[in-house]
Length: 561
Image (tube, rainbow, N blue to C red; front, side, top):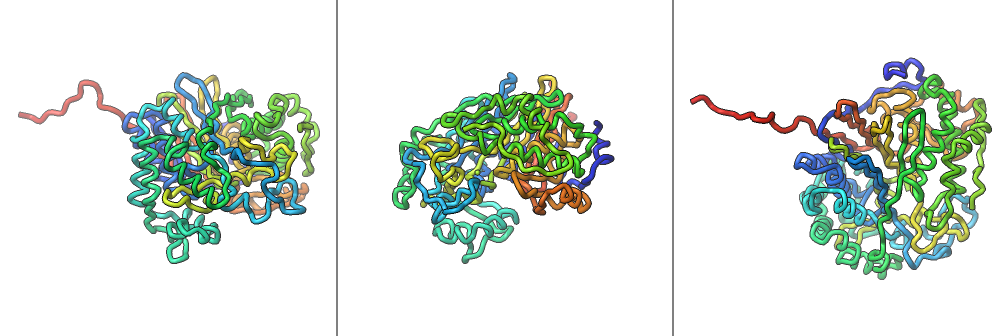
């Protein structure tokens, strides 16, 4: 279907708020302009996509401190110029001292609710899991980059030391977490001016963090995993009852995994495997949807949104039965992604009425994240998502370092005996979805976004927008979204009233949301070698393109004599 046709069949129409970027020699799309500029600086200096991605990641820890940090988790999807794909799993893990009964669950909480007494797994030192982000970034650069760690970290160090202007988005995030941040003296001193959240336009200088980054630029990952920054973190844990110990940091290993490969209408979709739930369930949902003419049903119609909602419920029902770290839980990947299983699930789907779904496999996380997508024009593509889990993670700063740790322990089931129960060394299940779509052996799209459990459903909808509806890249990332995993169907304001009523008539209980998941960052690759980059309105996202090039061979400039 042509791009111009999707509006003719749409039940929901919208106008894009941002402009895409176009270039031939490189593209960086992230959720902050200074981070995108950091990556572009590396490409302009002759670096490759991995150099640019790592520079962007470090810069994001400065300008998006509420989303990402050195003491966090990462899922990184790298496609090299030789055509190979690899997933670097740097997700956070349970400390060695973790036990299935280390927290006291709140009595009577629903199975999917992991609340514990005192919020110990959500806020404060006891919520911190063993981090993997820094080690992942450093190893990615060492293995696949071309520049030094000191060089790619310069923009991040500069912005931390000199400061940057707080955006309204960051100010709002500080406001949301202010009550917890106020309880920690370093966090309050940095982010709350006279007890109030920093206002937009205020210059945020992070001196301690600039020194921490400088230390990393000199010592690499060892600065945290066995060095001075790690010592500060462990000292903080020991004084406050946290669980992360020195051995957790020194023994942590980045795991390389092969991507999940799904087939959809002649496209190959590549995403991360377990412990990430995204690649498996995006493939599963596409397999079910392949049995319907989505293009004819139209974007944002009652029929299409009802179908998407039912498919999401199916995926989440199966996710509840078969998710987790494959080193601890048997995840029936082959069955979940099988076309035959999709056929069976599809046969029970009622196109006229909302249904309650249970898992069909019989097998025995946080919403605040950031994402970036980078390509260098030489065939290297990096699509990576990283987080400290909840907004501002554990909501305290490790004294003297400027580092805000993750609160990933909140993603584990505090009740023993379940697939996501706590066990030493177990990695957290994630919905991170750094995905790529290929046609005829060539990568055509790379995209991802933040948003906790809403990530992979949103990535799925973007793929449908591109493949079935024929949207432009900018339209695909900005299009209104939906999300559900059970009784309530969340829909964005952009879905019109007539469609809402149609969904309610089919039995869906609606909740209108300002956003579903976060800012998506995507790159499209064209046949002529050029690229389009797009970021959406849900975050401070910016696409930066590298065009132009070197002078024509033999060109000289001379003045007349």
